[in-house]
Image (cartoon, rainbow, N blue to C red; front, side):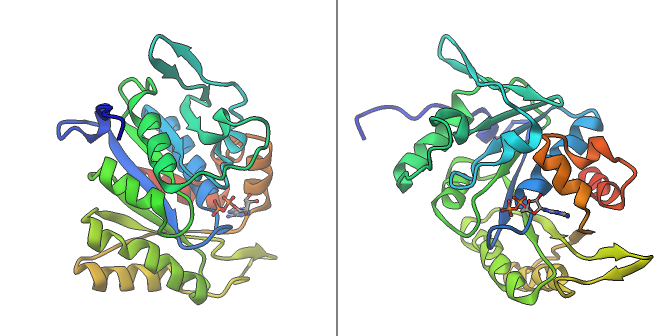
Amino acid sequence: RGGQAEKEIPFAKPNSLTKVFAVASGKGGVGKSSVTVNLAAAMAAQGHKVGVVDADIYGHSVPRMLGASDFPTKVEDMIIPPTAHDIKVISVGMFTQGNTPVVWRGPMLHRALQQFLSDVYWGDLDVLLMDLPPGTGDIAISVAQLLPTAELLVVTTPQQAAAEVAERAGSITAQTHQRVAGVIENMSYYEHAGERVHLFGEGGGQTVADALGRTLGTDIPLLGQIPLDTRLREGSDAGRPLILTDPGAEAARIIESIAETL
Ligand code: ADP
């Protein structure tokens, strides 16, 4: 289209040393973005060079959760991403006016993502995390095309109904031939008076891992079960991931251990 050559994406090169993870979920509100920013913060705290692409075009919340209030700058042809808590972050929200909703069509989303990957000066990253929109939409397919080596992380709640849609989001990899790094169960329980209260039921994460394993014909691990913690939400609202504000919290410890295994 227009005869323009597609720009090279450094992370797509076979010899790229950057590990790319695309964080997916079946539906919204399961904590996909919260998990993404806390994983990023945990990896950065573990000494890795980390970047985050907020590809959740419709619900872009990553900059707020990381407290990245600066805008990207331009140097010649490159876009310099702002940094927050040692994490480089780029979001479609940085390129829209105020809180204008994004009503782009598939091909434009694809081009935006392409630009985030090829025109942003990321430097030498160890890890790039991409917060995908919920579901199996255009962006998930674009990621598979642009970054075939990206591995998928599937976030779900313990609820069986949520698990079924999460499984659909994960099983797209059967067609795209991407690897699924594992399943993360969020909002697994709430600790009250020393007891675990299972507000959203139980078992969803394991159900998704088992079902994906059957579909893909390989073992898919359940990487961790993150409890509900009001401090996690407060930290996200204040632009400070729980990993940094309350590293001793059970939820933070579980996210740290997931970050270590990836
Ligand atoms: P998604 O990206 O899946 O739409 P978000 O990460 O935006 O979900 O999370 C939805 C809401 O739930 C946010 O207000 C977030 O702060 C909150 N939240 C997510 N995970 C937890 C958790 N483990 N404990 C407490 N609140 C959480």
